[in-house]
Length: 530
Image (cartoon, rainbow, N blue to C red; front, top):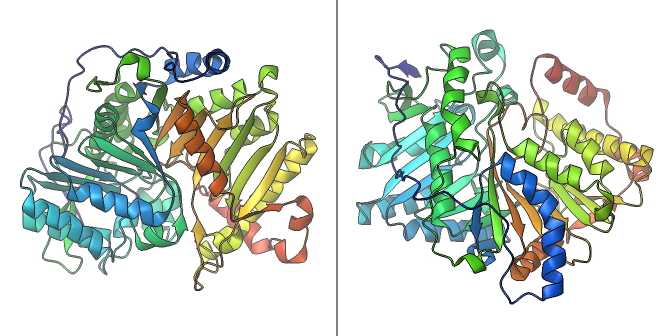
């Protein structure tokens, strides 16, 4: 249930449990420096010159941090992600902050790891942010909220804070009549930030068993206090715009309240006012001119060969929309349209393949050659053979991939862009996996491995750029070891793929039925999105 707390004061942003506030100690330098002397001089000049057109504009779009490439660890498998996350939680000394779409309602092992850490380390504080629609969908049956509420009961609200975000787009009659199974189409808290002390994992993975075992995603661990602090601030800001979970003696085991210390009025009471107040809070946080950047990192300047640009897509909370992800991705792809990048290449992946129309146009328009799109086959889609309306989604994404290849052919780019479908067995059968990875890699001319990569929660869809909350990091590097590891990541994600052509989509078994097309039209008509 929802409980409104009064009175309220929206002028103050309370730091959530597990978050420490830091003031910037100096202005951060954003110029792209030359790498250390370990890189051949000829390659250095060429690489820096080719990166300059990207970096010059990116510095105007988003804040950035300069680190050494060794401070980024690329994780490969769901198991490695889960074991790393648990190890980091066990080693926590000050704070744990977890932003995710949801935590699986049966993830008792993860909850136990959190409990054990909190029990033996009284200085550790925990803050968890999930989506309110997904996190309470099953209530009064077991849900994310009922799983997490006992942590508050055991350790108290001073040490544990559980927040659930609710979109301002789903109110009134929409909220009343749209079924729970599909109401997420009107906006979600979709960020995946897993921070412990001075490190943070950015990923597209949620916190449930399939993401820990047989659902392929991407995961980058950033060992930088400055980057961790920045994303902790992002986590804290969205938490202050979210409902607070409290234990309750009720069938569901919890209640959602709107504290009077929140930074805006409730989105269910006054959605327009909520957006206005959210804009005031968030616009300064994501702007390169006003973002609260710290400078804890002591890496020598000559070894800072990698720039990390935190990107946010908060379209539903910003009016006007000053989100940074879409402008940054747009700039990267537009730059690749220049003739000097004719020998470059890119790889783009999205488990749910439905790029925003502007990105589809830009991908096709790049001068790059030998480009690859990786997406899930229907048998690797998490909604494959799902009951109800959601079971139509694999067919919808098949239709969208088919339209993409049709556009590629129309622009005579068949030789430059290849579509690959990822499949490892069949979902819900023994040994079957699903595919949920998303990202972009750019390899410069005369290079074997990517110098640019995008990691995070976004699916790069129209929905991502209008309805969901997304957090990402754009990596621009001259570090040869990091470039190789990014290249390895790009290659291993293709190990379970096969090339799919327009002829394949024309086969009888790949044709999409009328029900799928009608369902897609209905969702768009009532304001939702895939």
